[in-house]
Image 1 (cartoon, rainbow, N blue to C red):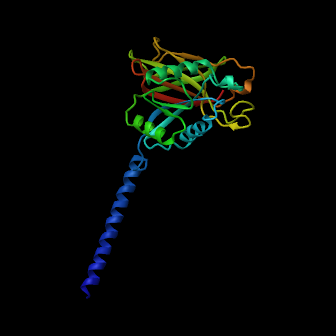
Image 2 (cartoon, rainbow, N blue to C red):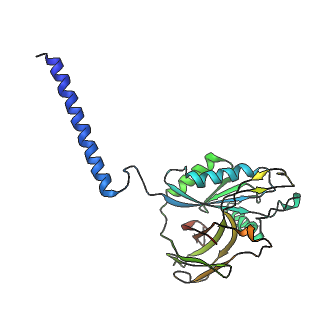
Image 3 (cartoon, helix red, strand yellow):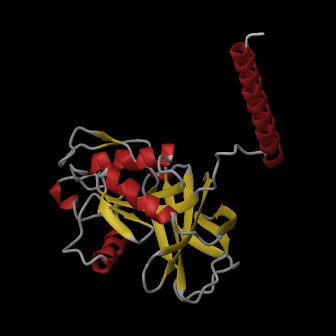
Length: 267
């Protein structure tokens, strides 16, 4: 017998046996865990975009936020997004129908926290810990990845439902004297046609637009029945669903997000 040929046949059979054994072990482990071996639990990360329909630099950031929400392209992170429309661009001839003063105030708090010269759009704030220009995909990805490296506490939304035009719900895991619970109702708005201002003639697309937000600081919230009212609007279709209820726990001193949860519901 040709020794070289015999050796080659033996090596081939050995490789096939190793591959078969490895595949069988892998398949057995997957069957036991019911998840792919490469799958890893994603860490929830809060991503806030301060934007305006009156700002010509904002549409690319709106698009980036929508892509992050739809594709979750940052490995290891579950991006929970909020689009927060500010009012200070409204003087340019187009009043952003989704803007309200609470968003201005929230952004001003971040201005002080990050020691910025002033508010600007588009601005992305990640987990209350990092901020960057909202259209900078590389910087946003890096900030989200950094946030996902920090383990979050467990936070659970319970019994969320509409009652008399308001959202009723409770939260478990929010008991912490050093932190505050914040709740926001965000609307999935598919499109908005801008008729005046810097974006005149454009059809803009929005994701998770904040319509109401409340900070429950100083209130015992864990397991308690909570209420969040939506704004009065002359047109019911402006508040058509679906909606997202997003709750997050923030540290009193650093404003960092310690926990965040999300639930989708219809109205």
